[in-house]
Structures are given as structure tokens and as C-alpha cells.
Image (cartoon, rainbow, N blue to C red):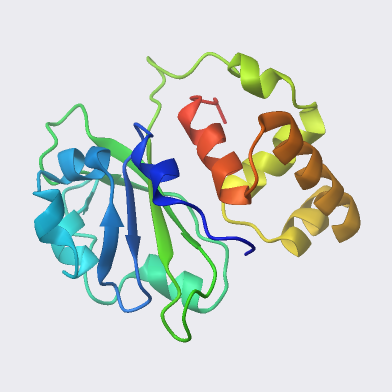
Amino acid sequence: MGREVPLEVFDETAVPILISDETGRVEFLNSSAAAAFGVDRAACIGRCCWEVARLRTLAGTPFCREACPLHADRAEERPPPRVSLRSPIASANDGTFEVAVFPLGASRPGRRPILHVLHPSHHADGSAGGPAPVLRRLTPRERQVLGRLSDGMTTDEIAASLYVSPATVRNHVRSILSKLGVHHRIEAILAWLLRGIDR
């Protein structure tokens, strides 16, 4: 997926982020994730992501486990659905996230890092208003492309869903990166998630 993304990009965000390898071993989590999971950040490195995150369904059933369906989707190159899950330390009315995972490229054979993004859920009584100024620079079509990127869709999948060519999608992505002043798709996705876009 191009150049490596510096971890500082993830550490400076309020969005909880965890990076594991393909086996589920935690390689990084930002302070927002540590707070959401109620864990000591340093003690989590090398542990299994399901032991660290301990996310539950909205009904309270444990979701995080060794046979993670989100990891299975990534292994089979399927776009990840956003799954609504609750933090293990959440009260009944907060700590709910839409969780999606994204591959970060193959930094070493067989150990591709997997990015877990926990986007705070917006409820009907508290949804985000609209695009922040930095995202108002994007055209409606560019917002569609970026929204689909944030859902984990590939270039070909976005092209098919919008009835355009993959080359057109790549042109939109280049324009998005330029307008947002970032160099990587993941950074653009984080800008989308951080700015509280109402999807």
C-alpha cells in the first residue's frame, strides 16, 4: 500500500486505533485505544488483540476472540463491514464504536500489519452535523470515494459501486490526498473518521 505510515499519525488522533499482525498480536495501540479498552498501553504489546480489546456486541455478547470474523474478512480480501461494538468498560450509553479493519501493506512476509479503527458511533440524538472545513474542499464524488475507502473497499470495488473505471477512482484518490494534504490513503481515511462525517 505504498510507503509506511508513521505511527505518530495514529497517536495524534482521538480515534481509538490498534495495529496487530496477521496472527492477532498487538504491535501498537494509541492512547485513545488504551483508554477505551481500560488497559495499560505498554503491557499490551505482543499480546493477542482479542485479549486486549475485549469488545462486546451491543447485546453484551463477547465479540473479540481468536477466530475473529473481521480478521477472516481481511485474510480473504473481503471489504470489512463496520460492526457496531461496545468497549469492555463502557456504560450502557457510551463507548459504542463502529469497528473496521484495514491491511497496512506487507512490511515483512506473512506478517502484514492490520489496522483496527474504532469510529465512535453516532446516534440519532447526537450525530455529526456535516463535513469539517478541510473536507468541504472535496467534491461530492470525492466524498463518496473517501467514504467507500473508509468502509474498506478496494479501488475495483469502488469503481464497480460508482459505475466508473478504476483509473477514475485512482484520479479521485490522488485529488483527495492532494486536497487533504496527506500522502497515504489511510491518512485520508483517518481525516474522514476524525472529522465526524455523518455517513
